[in-house]
Image (tube, rainbow, N blue to C red; front, side, top):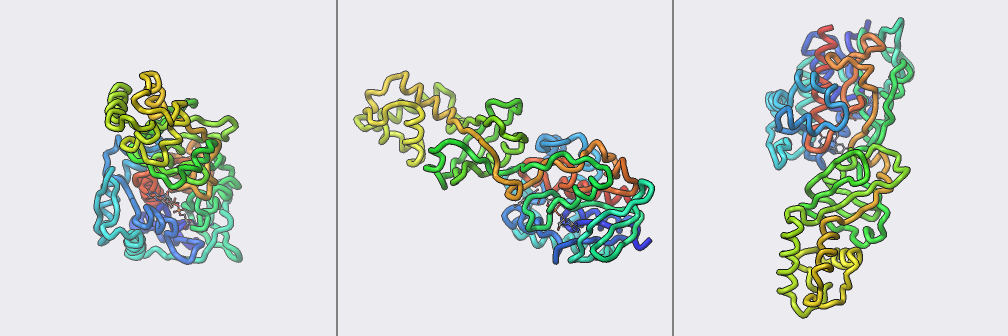
Length: 409
Ligand SMILES: Cc1cc2nc3c(=O)[nH]c(=O)nc-3n(C[C@H](O)[C@H](O)[C@H](O)COP(=O)(O)OP(=O)(O)OC[C@H]3O[C@@H](n4cnc5c(N)ncnc54)[C@H](O)[C@@H]3O)c2cc1C
């Protein structure tokens, strides 16, 4: 055999998997089809790389959207705290920001890649760039190596860490799904997650570019009871921003019938408090038209939209607004309706939901239950999480577990 372990894919999962296996004594080669390692890692966190979260185990599990139980062993074998300690031992200074998000102190994702590269070198992992794996080689349900364009490389074990299918220009083009499927693995249909949403309402276009802070968005007509608080933005196609991306992870459907969302523009105020607030504003702007009396409450651009949707005459003077009309206005402010007709394409998604079916992978080792010696790590598996550093921690934890178990089996 040429190697003990071949790792396919030089993203975070593959890099940590390769280095961990080598640290445990295996002769390892890491094959990456791009001209450099970690192309997707480089663009994470807007180039700052929110590589994990400083929360506790419960927090982690609460932020995993798909197959959290499957990830117990991986998180146990390599936690966020172990990841931070490892990267710091490799010279990376780190910092914790709002929401316990952990970043390199330099705000440079390239420093995370450098640290991982150093770890690969320290453990003598052979790195082959511009090397695309085309197929997996198997004999009698046992992996025997991989085939490239014109040659084959043999190994006792192979780790697939080829990522998902979003941002294809970074190298994740779904190769791992295809190769695993050829060997009998089933693939849960890859779908976009953490993705902007396309909406049906015409008025959304009028608000293009407007950011709303401290609002709540809720799914209304679906079983999923997701609700998110924070920031969102209106775009030419619909809505985006942190809370919209998070909500999208709970909408894994074909949108045969539209999904209803509600935005609460004033989540900190109860109905009663909002009514008091409206009365105070109306007193302040007494004698003015309704449309000119909401400047303290709403961004300018939103006022005509809210008034139109509430059905209250915007040309009425505020002192003539009845209690019922105030109620209509307050209701719209707390229940702004949005109709989601679809998501932006998978290529624009932060993460791919779906992938290798977890029922066919041993969660304690990440070895295939179908092919002996075949392991999986990272986004190629059917797991995904919300934003906050959780997806990269999944890649690192599963990378570590697959690397260490491939050495210990
Ligand atoms: C814009 C953006 C921002 C993000 N920001 C964050 C963030 O701040 N925090 C966070 O936690 N997550 C973030 N994510 C998600 C995170 O980047 C992914 O979850 C993570 O990169 C998955 O790691 P991976 O190693 O499984 O796959 P990838 O990083 O996709 O790596 C897979 C590698 O395999 C290689 N490969 C594929 N096929 C082959 C083949 N046939 N032969 C050889 N090599 C192959 C690819 O070229 C690629 O280098 C972000 C994602 C995007 C798109």
